[in-house]
Amino acid sequence: MAKFVCSICGYTYDEAAGSPDQGIAPGTRWEDLPEDWTCPLCGAPKSMFEGQTHSEEEPASAVPVAREEQEELRELSFGEMAALCSNLAKGCEKQYRAEEAGLFAELAAYYEGRAQKRAAKNFSELPPLIESDLKAEYPAAREAATSERDRGALRALTWGEKVSRILVSLLGKYQNQGDEMLNGTNVYVCEICGFIYLGETPPAVCPVCKVPSLKLQMIAKEAV
Amino acid sequence: MYAVRNIRLCTKDCLCLYVCPTGATDTETGQIDRAKCLSGCRACVDACPSHAISLVPESYPPQQEKKDSVTRALRLLAASKAKQEQLCKGLEQSAGTEASRRLARAMRLSNRLMAEDILRESGYMLPQSKNVQDLLADMLSTEQDDAFPRAAVRRLLELLTQQ
Image (cartoon, rainbow over all chains, first blue to last red; front, side):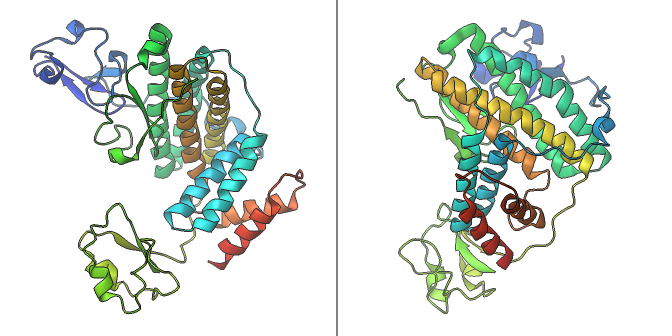
């Protein structure tokens, strides 16, 4: 009997134990699990699981780290400045510095207003961009952070990669099911790492960053 | 270092009111009066049975230095997430159904949070850090349009450099 590990939250599906809470009897083989079976902890689909015998080693990146070594640091775009400033507003809030938080939020709103608007016809424009992050930018950044032993950057990359994978899998599911995917269920976003969860109530802790559920914000339903 | 109260944890046992030598902990807002709080006193922190009070520092050590190679790679990712955030924002605004609007909104927020986290790790974690002060000073010395909140940046520099 084999074991399979969720690449998002680390839940292990053990064929010997099954998943009785989900009605999966002990001894159920991986290939016999229904195709629409999802991780009981984080809701990830079967495709996000890996056999536990697989090597833990990261595949070597094909992207050269030093590709821009000679270039100056690029200026931040308005969209990036908006995120940088909204993050600093949070940093002030956590120190109970309300005035500073308000001023950084004002700056963030200014940059947000100047960020390049991008109209999209539908959600299908997103997966190729996320796939490109996962194939090129994350491995390159991971390699740079590993060689500099930057644990903080590695932490952010680990969370971001997991959240990006969840977004790809949600978009794939949405392409098949359309609005049905969301009708009658709630959508939660983790305020710390951006993890998205679909379900009645949020998990006790965020499966990506492990923050308690009170930080998982429910997206309100609004009439269109 | 002055005391702050996390209202979510506070169980209203009021030991902080008994031990505070200045009455700073007894306010109608639930927050501790910073003007009355004695820096570093910590009597309320130690007395609180629900660990709802902590001390916020007034100064911080210099931040961990970030290497250019890491910053460069992180910024590429931040740019990608910022672009995706704008795409989601467009989808949210043009959504024809409640469900698709909710999904677009969740994804817009998710992308903003990822961009924030990545930029935080590229040298902009602490608002009081030298990096942030340099960035704010740069904003003032660069030409900006009329809508730019110059007064906000000046005030931020004033507040952040005091600390």
